[in-house]
Image 1: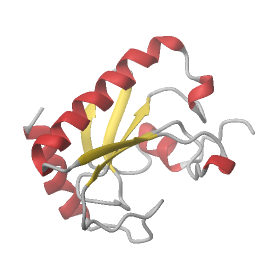
Image 2: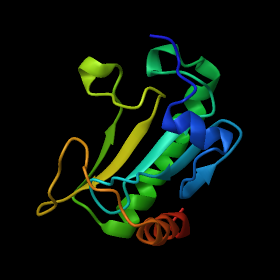
Image 3: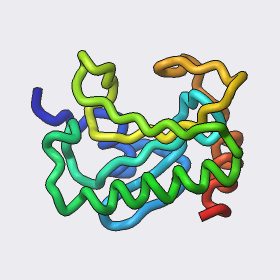
Image 4: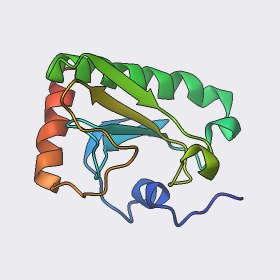
Length: 138
């Protein structure tokens, strides 16, 4: 399968779709998942058109990993979860549904109902408030 420029993350990068940004630099964009598994669920994507981790040029590794760690630390401060899950899937058989490389950062705590993917789109205003909490704790 080749890279599809019509996937939602490609559209976000091109400005053809909106997102609630958490962090951005020349190499990555991090934003709130519109179907969060828990409050603060954030996605980190490279600004490089690749469908999975296996095709990412090495120069992007430090940037995507630094951003993921920074956001995970902030989520830990904001929500005080018992754990933080960092999830990255490669290919449909692994559960990937958007074929642009992305990392999920999801707080995990007893009592939160987790599913592999949420089926409910969150209110953008709620996402903006959650994003600001994370940003404020960098």
